Image (cartoon, rainbow, N blue to C red):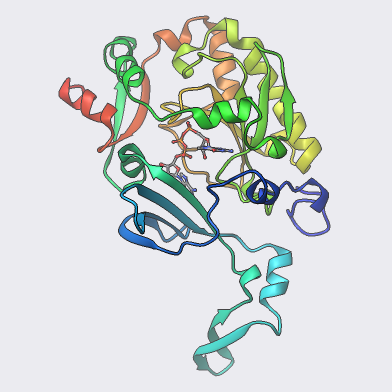
Length: 321
Ligand code: GTA
């Protein structure tokens, strides 16, 4: 829990916002969505109040994917909402019961928006609602299907190198260990609005290049994995006052980005991708490798693939799903 005055809000001095970066050295930062045309709603989730939209900007053939998400209330924002600045429209009144549509001032009505532009067909496929399937990947299927596929086709990891080389997001870094073999950068994940710790989400990106995924890990990586686990937890405790026992610390298999990284999310937060079929707890991964050096080279790994994903099509063609 946070030690700030209000429940689970981040102490102001510890909050790191994007604003300085946005206004200073970025030329392609959007100031409005003027000229944006919605082409298709790719997916929506009423529970998380999120919508994934495919669109285009005027005078451009490039695709954009926009993710809009209504953000959680905090004690600070709720005081702003429940105030005289808010206008209200009554929708029901019965005895002592009343419901209203409420229009707070814009600063208390934020919508977290992620814009991917230009977006590739792979981005559009990733965010499109579609059937999903559990796949069983034996070591042989990994070398025959998965590895050739991901060597030929995967999401660009330029954004990862930008972080490691301090070209982007350097002001957001929470902790860095710069050792080339065991070091990493810990920073807020793109999905976290950093307004409260209830939905805390950070990623640790290792400095060492060439570790694609869980499949590559062996005992030579134990110092790196232990370092991320121990120092990542400590940095989060020091910065956000969230104890390690309140964190879900895991690796995705398959990830979207094949440069080794670890997800740190708050236990209270049902983060996308934190379920079985995707997430492997870092402490279990360490334990498994301690039991057997080549555990992840020998194990059959189960994971969920989307029907539109290229990798799923490869598995389908080979008759393995
Ligand atoms: N700080 O530039 C970045 C950046 N990028 C491009 C990605 N990430 C970044 N973080 C910073 N700066 O957690 C983060 C991602 C993700 C991690 C990569 O890096 O937010 P991964 O390689 O395991 O890939 O992790 P994965 O699992 O596909 O990640 P992602 O994007 O979270 O997708 C999982 C599912 O979550 C998606 O299929 C989608 O259904 C859902 N999702 C994605 N984004 C959002 C969102 N903004 N809101 C709600 N749901 C989302």
